[in-house]
Image 1 (cartoon, helix red, strand yellow):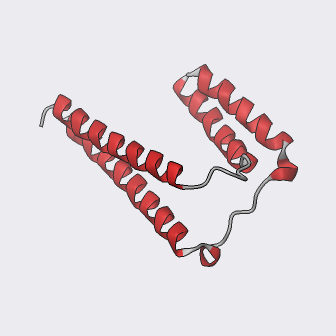
Image 2 (cartoon, rainbow, N blue to C red):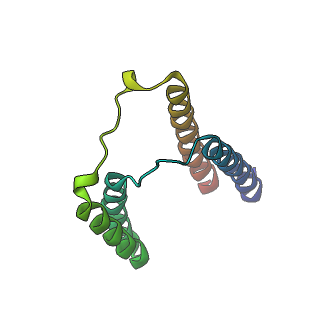
Length: 117
């Protein structure tokens, strides 16, 4: 396969995933939603090394900002519910998300090695 064809297929898969994410986000009620500051902190500590490794200082600065925001609001960190505490709909949504992200990861690795040949 050509690189362009692989990129088109990967782009279509990503667009489908984004459409599913948007539809599911609109289906949920947006009321009584507060930011998850623990997630901001985790994003920050992930983006800092990515920014350093890729010499992309935007990621490093954004990661630092996310980390500071998450850490300053540490008292408001939410505890994640355990799998048993989730409703069947939430379990189904999380499982679908895990499968989709795993599929995207595997396809990305496969396309990387195919494009390298």
